Length: 468
Image (cartoon, rainbow, N blue to C red; front, side, top):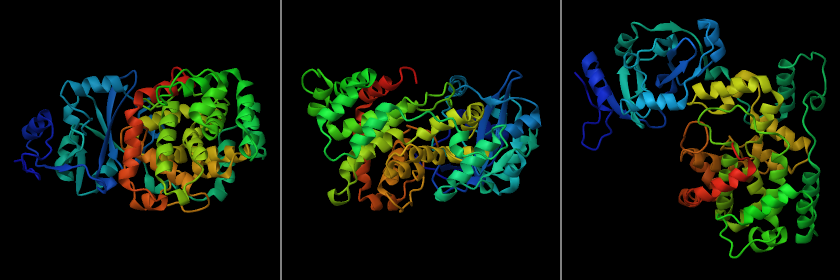
């Protein structure tokens, strides 16, 4: 008694093991494509968690954030997402690519959020990417006879993101810091957060950035006083990514023959700032390594900037720097809230349908974008850079220096839709392309060029941090 909505030879099909299971259970269903715009309350999110006791299948709607703290209160267990390798092995046995939300498929106990059943029908992963099963909620209930019901999800409608209220940032960051420190005495934010001072090299580079008379000799002199930075600039220029003719023999050679003054000054600044905060030892499973994501984003932005009509084109070096530092707030969060950063990582793992903004807002009351932009201003970095970090997740942003956050938003979205970076893939609004004066084709071309040089880019990223 199965009803196939797409009964053509070319239609996507669920894996054989799933079709057999549904046939055996006698459940009516429809097959449909996973398209943007399906109601989040009807999209079932399945995640497999475990601890020393064993595995637990957890089901909840994509209109919610899975709160691990509440799960701990309910179950008395410290559950986290199963390791990706283990999940891949389990799915691989049945030729599945993603975890279907069908309790009879696993031998694990199941816990579901009772609000899952408040809709007429549910869209469920079939095990094949891009292919969903639509089941009536009544039919789905028959699969939950051995499952437990509870309330553990946080409705996204309760989480008020701050994408466009920068005037509230200072107060919100202060509240978040005070909530996570034992200090109850009101202090200035700068005294509460132990942020390292801006490195001397970075201070010198910032002065050169705003000096109209600065020369190649000036930036060469600054870079050469920092041996590690000098070595990186030379190896950067010698990278296969730039395919420079002949051997690069010096910093000056790297600047004059390959990289150019503008790129080197912003690259050196990004490298110097990157060293002020160390990479956290903990990170979400399956996350794109921090510097790899940074380099990819900067390279895509470099291509996008060139595609912008000359009359409205922003400062190329500064857009590159915005790409390099776009996720700097991630390092700041790890530095300021070390015990809670691991909790953020665990929540990112079990909420793959959500952007990090919801998780950070729910757990901390602020996002990495707010604290990253605040730090840029505290360090007297260019205002364009602070705006790029702060408004990068608002594709509709048209305020001061909008081109910079718009470029970061487009770059991150394009890469995410190609499987690089964290968070759900999404349709990029046409208005974002229009505001930048770039066609979709040109933008996709810029990403394709970067991904064609993937091996060379990974080598560049490895120079920042050998392991992660």
